[in-house]
Length: 173
Image (cartoon, rainbow, N blue to C red):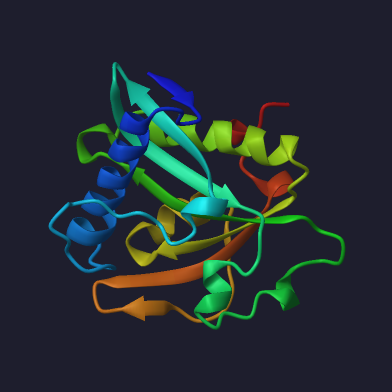
């Protein structure tokens, strides 16, 4: 397995299909579509990382540093939680195929994400954490803020983390 930036039409196609299976079929956040693809509304400003085994995309995560973030569009007030001068990224769409979830795929995606964020001077990350995985996010160091948002079967908790506060196993220094 390798972690990389997607570079081919096939990789992006598979990324959109993975988003669909995760955020439409599994977590019913979006409506069903006949083409079974979910292209994120922030696609043009997202920076993606994918986990690839052979020619198959088995996991993905993305981030962006361009506001407004999706949390802001959902009326979550984030500015009170961002220290002056802090460069922030919104981390989005962590998705791993079900059969690969109890492996190192998520861990390796997040390790590479942290390297990318640090390389780009980002010191704080924001997420909309699915309440289904709340324990996971708190375990690696994320803190809650604001109220739970979303709809039935697709609730999210706004969370933040300072990169320096991540659990040591995600750091490369």
